[in-house]
Length: 230
Image (cartoon, rainbow, N blue to C red; front, side, top):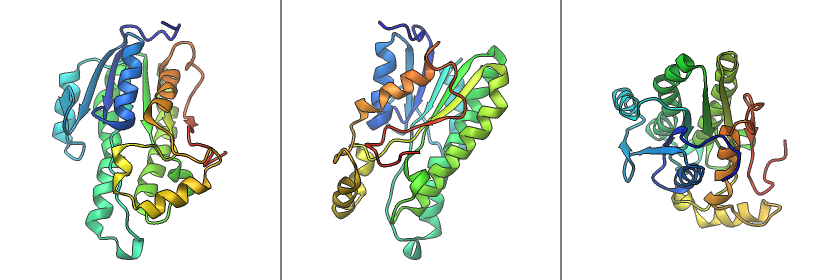
């Protein structure tokens, strides 16, 4: 085991039932962390991120949490001119407000113990946007703004908040995106391919690690196949 300082740390991964979240959960288990996953299905804890009472119940059931990973999300596709308010709102509710609610109910315990890590999984589309993905891009841009502001609030009390902005990753999340979009996107990438979840998970371990993650405050790390080069 590497010197990550994560053995016995209590880790809660939202969206840990599949995709990037599942890979992150497994990566922390490999570090001997005590991992709980939360999702709508196939997880240790069931949670509906659009329902504050559900999030509160999840946080209570999880108990003290050292590392919170907000990896849950949805992805649909529509031109803005055809997008309904319901489609817009659903994405904002899950991908942005869900992050707020999870932080609101888990972070106070970290503040009380004066140690913690919050890792928010955003997207490179928060930085560059995407055709047919205005709602998703806006939500993920909100996650980056939340990350930076919360990092400023919490760093003085020993809680570090950072984000990961992956590029396209082969997960169930992208199954609903058209094949034309995927082909076009692959052609844009310097690596010429989408990533896989196991290539993202080590970034979360780095951000949570001690001492490896100790100087990351409000940062956005981008395992994105070269799609964005800040």
